[in-house]
Each structure stands twice: as structure tokens, then as C-alpha cells.
Amino acid sequence: MLRIAVPNKGSLHEAAVRMLTESGYKVNRRGRELVLFDDVNDVELFLLRPRDIAVYVGQGTIHVGITGRDLLLDSGAPAVEIQQLGFARSKFRFAAPAGQMKELKEIEGKRVASSYDHLVKTFLEREGISAQVVHLDGAIESSVQLGVADVIADVVETGSTLRAAGLEVFGPVLLESEAILISRDEYRDDPQVAVLKRRLDGVMRAHANVVVDYNVNERDIERTTAIAPGFESPTISPLADPQWLAVRVVVPRGDINRVMDELYDAGARGILVTELSASRL
Image (cartoon, rainbow, N blue to C red; front, side, top):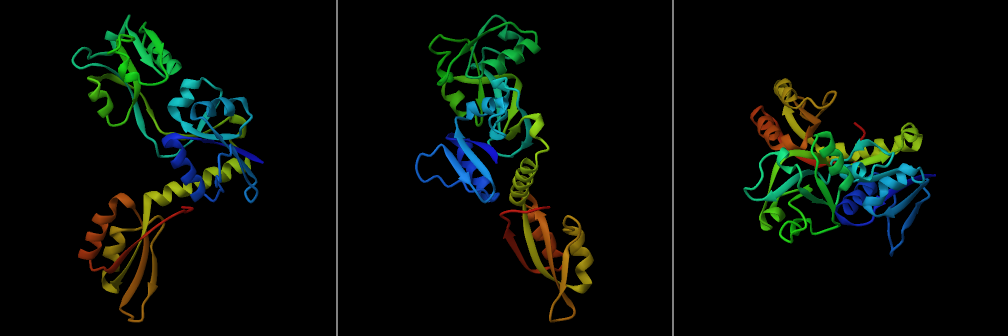
């Protein structure tokens, strides 16, 4: 039975549960259960603190888990990233009071507050910078104002929280993080892990694409299929009027409005867009 660790709270939780559900796994929590059973897929799902998932996976007690790249690297656990999941993207940056610091070397000898001690220490050592890393579990932005630290290192999404605290980012990006699937090397080729990866990939690809159906006169078919050729080739079917054809093609979601405009200009009519929930492309 495959054991999967799922974040039990926070932004990672909702997106991970939604993704697993769309991948065909039963993640139905009726109350406050910490372990869920999916007999159909021969899977056990463990709801764990996001910070602890890498530790459990690294110890081999859990086969795979969903967590953040930042949490994996900060844990120091012997687990490895096996698949990017495309959500919860963020950047890890240094920040200091506005106008005080511009370059990484200015951190030398300073106090750096962070919830990610191991990650920050490893980065600074690699850059040849000596600084005191102060561990805090929350409210990192207040540490400078309260005199606990001179600099902070934290996850930055929009930067609005930092600006509200009178801080601004500086120096290089420590890490670009996102939700990832992690495991140990020996489970990479496990058949159930392969199925899980394929299903998750199918959901991500479905979210990234849409299906476009349209009708087009036979004389314009070459022009429209050149605009939207699909993955291998479009599906083309005859209509009741022998001069017209029905076309179905997969198009990247981000290009859909441009593609629709170009298809219409090229002679396509009755253009319809359908959402995808899962795929194997």
C-alpha cells in the first residue's frame, strides 16, 4: 500500500487535496482524521504538518509526500524532489529596513532572523558570509523593529507584508520555491509512485490547456490548423455540408484568446472552448 503525506493545513493543504482529488484519489475528511484510506487505489494518506513531511519521507516511513521545496531543503532530510506540482510558488529573499542594505556582502556580521535556519545558513556559507542566524517561528517581519535581528530571510509572495513593516528586499534570490512531490531515491521507480506522478502530471497538463472545437470551410482548413496544430495533429470530422469540417484541438490556456481571434480571422466559425479536468497527453 502506497503511503502519501499530505499537508494538513495552510495554502499547501487545499491545493494538494484538490490536486489529489482530481487525480482520482479519495481525500474525503469527515472530521479531524489524520489518516485516510483509499482502498480503490490501495493508498493511505497521512495528514501531517508541512514542515514534518520531509522528515517522515526521508526516514522512509512514508513513500511520497507533498510539501514546499523550501521546507524540503530546510529540513536537511534525505528525501529528494521527484516532481514539480506548479502551485504555491514563492521566492525566498533577504529584507532589511528600507534604504539600509543593497548588497549581499552587507549581511556580514549581522543578525538574520528566519524560520528556515538550515536553508539560510547553507546559503550564507556557500556565499562565504558569516552571520548569526536567529530562529523565529513566526512574525519574522517584526524582528528588526523589536531589535532581535538586523535582517530577515523569508518567503516573499507579493512583498506587501514587508512594505507594511518598513522593509525592502535586497540581494539575490535565495531560492525559488513551489509545491513539489518528494520521495526517497529507492521509491522513484515504484509502480504506484509512477502512477501517482502520471496522474498528477495529467491534472497539471489539463489545467494548462483547453479543448477548442470549431467549424471551418474545407478551403480554409490548412490556415486554421497552422494556427492551432495541437499536440500531434487536430481531430477533423466531416459535417452534413460536405464543404464544411468540424475540428477539435488542444490549445495552451494562456494563448486561447489570441488563438480564437486568429482562427476567426482565418475562417473558423462556431468556436467553442471546453475546460479539462484531467488528461494523459
